[in-house]
Image 1 (cartoon, rainbow, N blue to C red):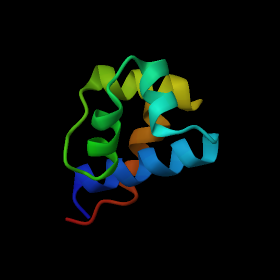
Image 2 (image 1 turned 135 degrees about the vertical axis):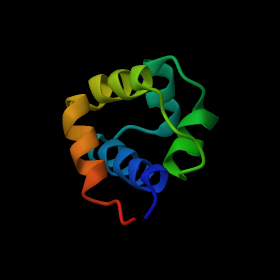
Image 3 (image 1 turned 90 degrees about the vertical axis):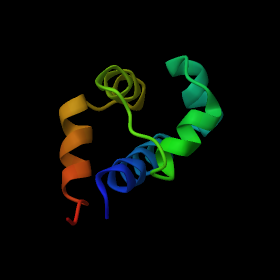
Image 4 (image 1 turned 45 degrees about the vertical axis):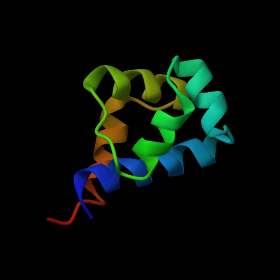
Length: 75
């Protein structure tokens, strides 16, 4: 799994665990819903600022989000 795909899988899991839709997360994080979809499908790379904002709204630290992503990467 690439880093982009791993981050996407992590984002999708955290979002699902929080019971929040892509649209609701996008609204809270001031991002476009299609961008959330692109991130979850591993088609875009988030900036550090985006990771921080998403983590805040998903109730985790950015470090926890990155750690969960690292566990999925296979290079």
